[in-house]
Length: 155
Image 1 (cartoon, rainbow, N blue to C red):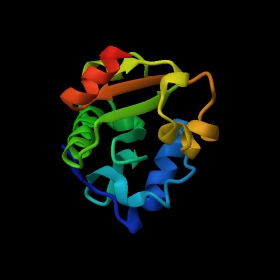
Image 2: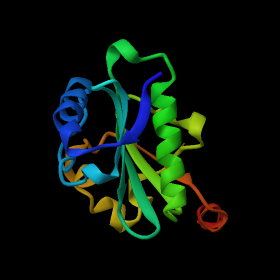
Image 3: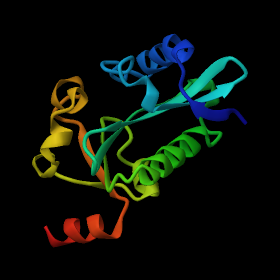
Image 4: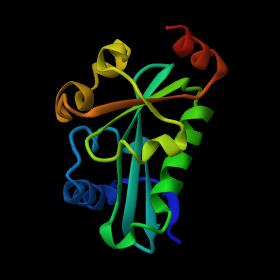
């Protein structure tokens, strides 16, 4: 099983290639590399996920991809679980994501659909939300704290 670690500068070309092959946006990845995790088998990057912090409360789970030949081995699951744990440890209360292909994958982690217009302005202001992903993308959310869960339930 590949190891999951924080991305470093040397990983960037492999991350960009992996995201490109998966048809995912690469805009902003280089600038936000420090918030990316990779799954590495030796020197090969076989998976990636990012947590783009939008404010002290909100973050965007983005760029989740696993190399085709490594899919079905639980790597994506481990990456997403680690990203959620990192966001939670960093005090993020609510995670959002956009997807055009994996709306049935993310509910297993507790994500549920939400309307685009209900997403906080800090998240809507991200380049991924504003322009990199199509407006037809499904928006999903995951509350990480009790207080955030209550505010979502109340609204």
